[in-house]
Amino acid sequence: MKIVTPFRVVTLAAAVFAALSLSLGIAVAESGHASGQPTVGVFDGDHNSKACARSRHDLERNEHNVVAYYQLAFNDKNPQLAVKLYGGAEYIQHNPLAANGFDAFIQFVQSFTTAFPDVHIDIKRVFAESDFVITHSLATGAEPVYTALGSKVVDIFRLDANGKIVEHWDVLAPISATSANGNPEV
Image 1 (tube, rainbow, N blue to C red):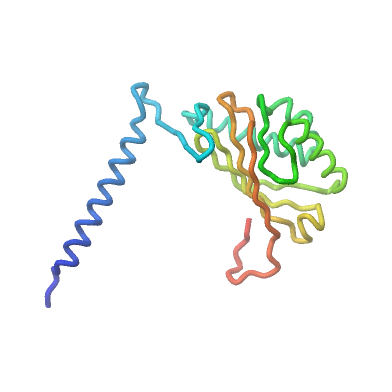
Image 2: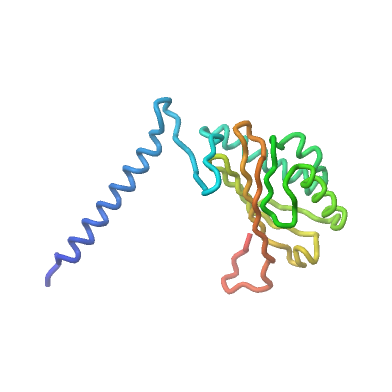
């Protein structure tokens, strides 16, 4: 019985090399720059942001601001206050149903919550990285837009250096009536 084969040696060497490369890359990323702060940054193809949150405090502030903004605008039906407290200098919108700018956001939310007064956004998960915050939510109370079972929503917000919201993307899909695995979608 031959235990060590050339293929196994090459595979082991590749695995060790990959593990070392990964740990070296992580060590470099975590070491950051001379200040000792971690280097956190994302280039997403459109933005090379200088507003990247670099501390846990800033990331938590950004998470808080996005959740408060979203809940205040939709659940409390007060988009004006949401914008006043959490809106930045601009608002770039990627939802094709809404125009750019906070005035357009306020108008959109007012129109939507007037048409669907029972709308509710239940944020289940929040993730912050760099100057982005992502929420994973269950949206209900706006049939037929959200369907009778509701819709699963992923929102992506970009924030400025002061933790103010300046950009938004979203993905929305109806909750399925059946599930092969029995796990919740949100």
